[in-house]
Length: 267
Image (cartoon, rainbow, N blue to C red; front, side, top):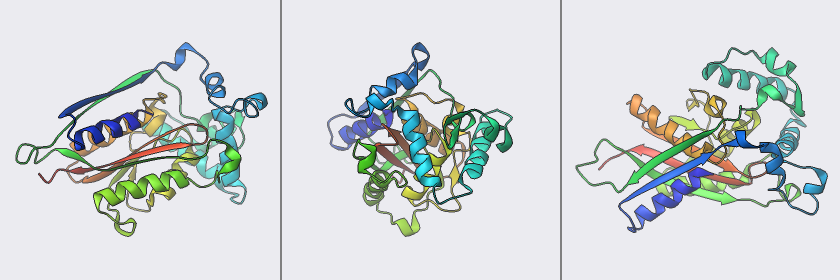
């Protein structure tokens, strides 16, 4: 995911290797069948022979979460409708639940629409006095879980929790008092949003993807980087928003996770 490139660029700036770094991510899924391509990202001997792709992996993850949660599907339908409507659609939870089954309990309406796109971010070393009112990177973290689905608990985003802990530690904040005003989760499905919020320790009082998140259009590779842009854009337009968390994910059932914590500069 492109947010990993941003983390790499930020690390280069922090290490003093460069003063300014340009980070770019792009994808054009309209050129091919995206789900067919994700099949080839799976383990080749067993997973590919069973036809497992990223969509079916997401369905298995959602099923694991819903196993002891009778209200999960209805709740996810409401979340999907809310995200779609924020990005300009006119949907109801009933519309979502009546849409075609994709990888039960997931339905077509629960998936963010694929889109072609590109995203670019410039990272620059801050200078005292010059960058007093700028937005800075306060913390960052990433993690990679086991590839095989049977080797991890799909109902928990343990890798994301570890990535968040690294970001929080660098920023010097505690999970008991995060003070995060906005989170932009890289959630292709509503159950993934729930996983992100729980793993990040986000509870009430935090704004979640006010513009619809990936339901504006899911661009593979660029998705997480676009969440960073969304965080910065919101902070620039809302002075009361002082701390945000951008999230990126990739791989089957969120195997890879990345986060970047942003704050207003104190330079």
